[in-house]
Length: 141
Image 1 (spheres, rainbow, N blue to C red):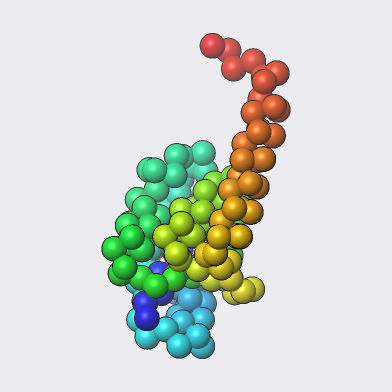
Image 2: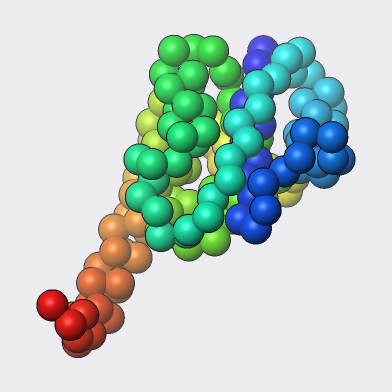
């Protein structure tokens, strides 16, 4: 079974000759949980507000999940998808809908009907909250 290990950077791009603790965590988790291979998806995220469709490695991982090239996803912390909770939920839902369990160092988010509905509900509530907050903002346009 193949695990997709997702890693991202927000400050400076990772140099290939440097030690990467997130990938090491993923490899340790892989061996402890009897996965026999892995693919890494390393991404540099300069702006958290960038649309998820522009996140190349995240989308490559979702594509690989669609094609059956990976069996599950590991991210050492869910906030690595995005510290913005709505965007993290969006990534998790996209993977869950493909049947991908999302594992992290503290456990996993199972891709079942109940969890997908729960995350979608949280996602929608967060967007409603953001919409309500932003109604009074003057965007100068």
